[in-house]
Image 1 (tube, rainbow, N blue to C red):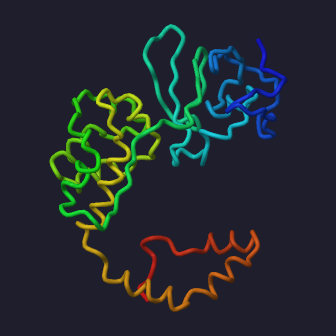
Image 2: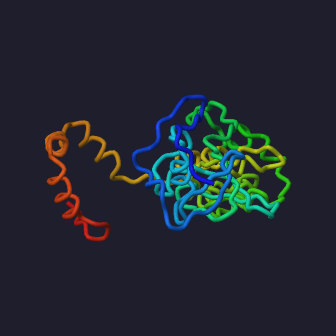
Image 3: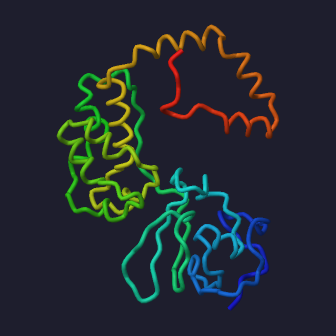
Length: 254
């Protein structure tokens, strides 16, 4: 079994092989299935790189490649194991017998709302997403989350009106949508948490007294010269400036 030599079609469009993929020979190859078809890919690749090695040019379901953006959430199984597994394709290494499929987007509900129009912010999330009241407490969302977030916990906090706790528990959410894909109550947990954080930030966190001052400085043009200098700088100069930057805890109040 060998990797294909012809471009593979994804999203209905012919694709060229990525120039970044490894050569088509490797000492240790493992069998996987991608979209139901068998391939052999080098051991040690991430799932995302395995897709590219197999001939897929990823135009959806790929983003930062650093485990931050959540664009490459993936669901897979192993030969001989009925249990579904999840992860980020840019972080999860391929193993022999993986059954893979890209998951570029999972549809979730996200109604329009005006943050300035909420009366009681503690009730706001339930008003926009009333389906959260159907939560069964089944723990399916917690089991599938690649970030290990207590999704069920922040939904419970939202139902109690505790937006501070909901915001804290959901802070590391990368909006991959896997929780919504497995919820029997069909809740869009990621979007309910986003609204909870927005309402908490707008109505419940005491604003810093320094923010209006800094906004006024920006509007006055105080930083325009420095910004223009950075835009005009070449790569080597930007690297020097970055290396010499002030780190948190070392900044001096001016």
